[in-house]
Image (cartoon, rainbow, N blue to C red; front, top):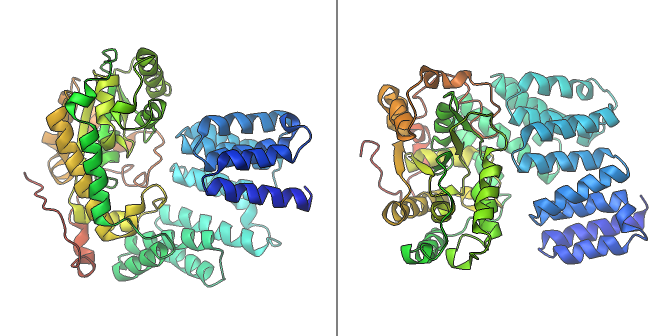
Amino acid sequence: MNDDRSAIFQQAQRLAAAGRFDEADALVRRSSARPARDADGLRVRGHLAMIAHRPGEAKSLLEKSLKVQPSVAAHLHLAQYHLNMVENDAAIAACRAAIALDPGNAAARIQTAAMLVELGRVDEAAEALAPVLERSDADPTTARRAAITLASIEIQRREFDTAIDRLRQVLAADPSPIERRGALDLLAKALDRAGHHDEAFAAATDRHAMDPPSPSPESILADADRLIAANSRAALERLPIGPMDERPVFIAGMPRSGTSLVDRIIDAHPLAAGVGERPILERAAASVGGARPDDAAGDGWSSLAARTLADLSAPVPAGVTRIVDKSLANDRLLGLAWRLLPGARVLHVIRDPRDVAVSCHLGQFNPAKHPWTVSLAGTAAAWEASRRLMAHWHATIDLPILEIRYERLVRDPEREFPRIVEFLGLEWDEACRRFHESGRPLRTLSFDQVSRPLYTTSVGRHASYASRLGDVAWPDYDPDA
């Protein structure tokens, strides 16, 4: 690729990042005499569409690029697309296609290993990464990125001290901003797991200092109040009603509140399946103009419901009668769910806001998608906003909603597990107690925690960070209410 074309692609990426996707796309198309047969251009345009949150266009353009001329870069972009869409097997298949095309390509192996770790497939990740680690001629960037990925493997293997030392070496080696973010995220996790709480909090704080500031608590709450006002019962009842289908189950609640555990318990039932954090309702909302019900068009409502049900059920085996989605946006979209999928059920998982905030602060969240995770006060406000929204849905929509308190769930599973299964209209099955034995990949920050037997040590986790929490106005919460 010549320097002029590289400059054009870089300019296009800046335009897309600034929200000017159409201009970026046009710039790349004009740089080629035959845009439809330009593999590099199609690949870059697919990447731009991902930046602009246009997944359909991204997938189409990347597949066209690969059809014109297969490339490692296009396979890896397609892998990221599939991972974003929670299509895990397809993501790994695209990564492996990149490696097959060029077995010595370090970037392909590092991305494959990173994705496998994220999916909990640690031994496969180590195998994919090994050839990169064995090279003695790797450039500094490749060496740092391989070291970060290896540290993530070591953390999953509970080799915390080794991972901590490795990550500190990366941070001392003048890493790029993206490498520094990744290393600090993992360092905070390793230090926390090793019991070095002050150092863990400091590493996470250094990571958040690289992000834009959190929205103010006032703006977070005002946004929730606007959404509540737009989703009055009268406004929602102007929407058509979709077909009755009892399969959909939506888990709502803050991240790090126990939603993954509930998902796993249900998925262990032979008549149920969890699909993880798939953007089921978000895709439906995009089709009708967003979360505001008065933006929706009535035409094609049945068709939209059918597409949404197909989207929900595509990855599950035949015979399943309950399908669980745990997208983090569900608490904002339950009004739409009521009108589109009136046979759905909702599980609202709630946990001490201080434990949620500490877990979010130490977690590897995307600040562009969850900007409030940058500060404890922001997370406290987001927790309160979610509670207001769920109180509104309880009072406004006709979907059955079961509240689950995380603390009771882990302390009294003999009562709480059957209560969840009964709410879903299923017969109790002992497999639900063995949720941690499920082989289903789970793409979530909690994947390593819900792959082991139930434990209670995360209750009151905030006590280890008590000295850091005093300046925040925490919402009231009673785990036994």
